[in-house]
Image 1: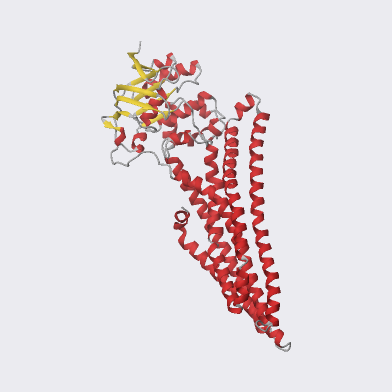
Image 2: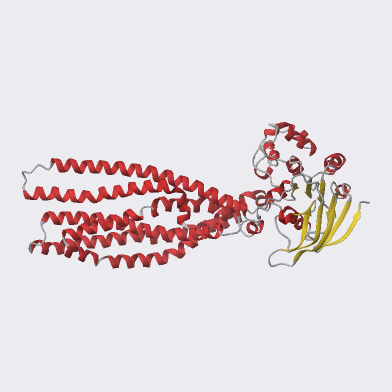
Length: 547
């Protein structure tokens, strides 16, 4: 999975890897020069070490320059991966069917876009990319140790199993805690997002203290899990340092006898210790890499699970609804939500172009489900839905939804200007088109009275507008598409009586130009319908003309 994430960034990652290898080569050459310098000084105090010192200083300066360039390249690549990965996750989430979103909290998905996407990008450019140079540094340093004194190098190798066992034991405990931490963080994010969007309800029921306690409990759970994770992570480097320190002590102890026996010179011991130190530093980095890998595994599993979800069923057929007249035919349509009884059973209905149909029935009778099937949000288990004789299952979702304007019962407006909210229904709509749609929805007059008119920001979900005003904006947004089919789900529910009467009186011209499906219980709105269809328990129980 990581290879798939990293593949589009081969060029900058290759450059970063090259800089890391250059840094590794310079790092490995410094102990050798240090050993040469020590050997010359030990042999004769009259020898001038100037050239060696200058070479060392030049290497250190070059190392600093390489590391600076490396930091710039990796930082830019990390930010690019983060941005691209966030967009990829966002696009995939948009492509998933509503059933997926109904089953997941928005806060959990927000955590994927922010915290967890950042973890993956940081892991690729920081932890994973550094793995090869770390191994090469250790291998290169150890080869030099063997070249200097094979016996002493073998003694050093016997210390490695203890370090590996320690890493395994700590990593085994870290893995489940990392997964729990990801879930806890997502839960806390979901609670915060949900509560901030429902702040009016929280205040209305005086639940501020209770909700604060609930969020505090979740955040404290994150805190405790993060502390546990950091405690385990903190053990990695001390364990590595302890092992390497023991190695140095044992090397010096064992090397002293080697020097006495004439098998090792003092200058070789200095070089050996410098290379041992050069190997010890990446060993600490290796411990850090192992810990980061354990922490990131949970994130990768969650991302893999989300990205493996199948998008909405859209075979991308070429069939489209070029200029639909608006005839709708439902033939023996049945549908059930997962794990539940049928929401619709054997629905058959013909709606003529330009006809207005009212759907009525008690809550849960299947009215909104029928609308969702028409929009292609779900596919019927049996039966067919056709527009102008074309089976909608053979039509691209974009073409289908472009032909339908929807004003949902749960209004969804954006924290943007009135103008932008209306134009959301039609990209690049002109000012005249926006105002015409607002007039058709009888929203123009109240919009003009707002502080900045059409440029007034309406707040999250249109909180700065009244319920009736929000519905008029949503209606204008649907009308600006100029769709041949218009679905109004309780579109006048928040109108006051006078406003509803006024809307009914003026709506005939707007609605008569298209096929309209009204979901309503209000007698005044029923007056717009040519026929009234009553649903009960997912079945049509009556179809009658308006009386």
